[in-house]
Length: 240
Ligand code: ADP
Ligand code: MG
Image (cartoon, rainbow, N blue to C red; front, side, top):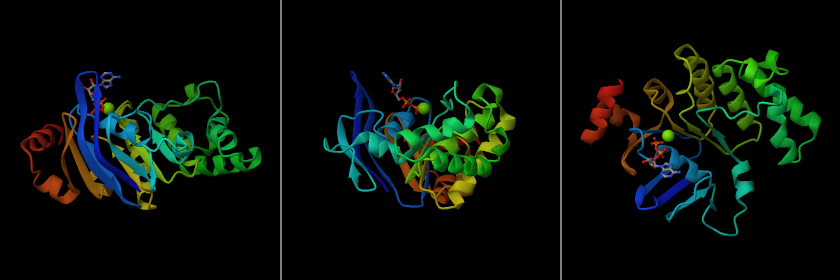
């Protein structure tokens, strides 16, 4: 579903991604972790063509991001993205947040978009809040709305960038529960997170980044049982 091949990126003279190669198969859940500043957000944004890169190639479901002929807005419409800071539209109701892109981008009718939006809010346990505004909801609720909003576009895969790291501890579980359910339903997911409980529960593979490089990429069992690099050993020792 996602093929990342030899991707490098510089910010000025600083190489922030260094020859990154990995992939996410259909239905696979890949957790990306690593120290702050190691390039995790940059890598995941490249997959969604939110960041240009200098070298290498990325394809999503066979469509190359590099190809000038590729319709990037169309590609993005099929790649769900969930950020650390929710990024809901503050002036719109929760249901309107879910309906906007399906109507504007996919051309869905208002009625169909609302029906699907309500069903998704039901799924994340927030059907009763459809008429509220984001500011009236907790951080955990807002993040569940953000996930539902991404799902409203029928994405072929979902990208998450530290979806729980801005949340109060007591709200992390409700967001992870939604993500675990999504993973179990077979969604293809690339998840930047330090929630190793989540990784242990649903990840198929763990990618560990350090200074712009992917230094480990393998089944979660081997990553947790015997990380190959000292850098990953130190990282795990600190966060577990
Ligand atoms: P992570 O998500 O792993 O914490 P990032 O992908 O956000 O790491 O950042 C990787 C590196 O790129 C860091 O050294 C960061 O300072 C740098 N960086 C990120 N965004 C920019 C930018 N817009 N301009 C310059 N440097 C940046
Ligand atoms: Mg980041």
